[in-house]
Image (cartoon, rainbow, N blue to C red; front, side, top):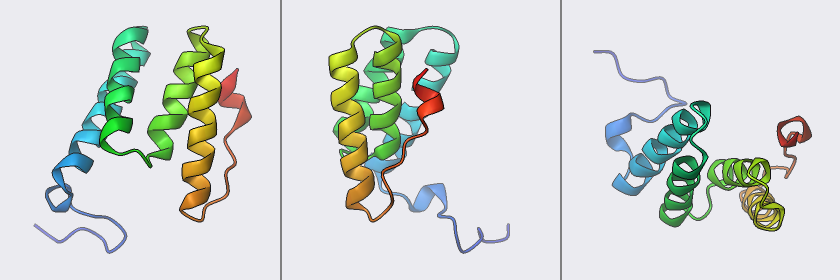
Length: 100
């Protein structure tokens, strides 16, 4: 098999905690798509525990919590996402359309 392009990392080259984080985020997305909010929240909470600087997981967790009516916790998650995003040198600019 040809090697992966230079801008990607082969899944087997990722540390275990990163692979597990990605699996949890994927499981959360599936659960969210099926309307299973509690399992989605649980998976994302596990993902941010494994990878506390995960802008994606914090953002998704904030969005789901906002939809679930927990605006206080949603705000804290989205603020954390903005801080983690800014900490890696990327602009903290969540798409406001996703918060509706």
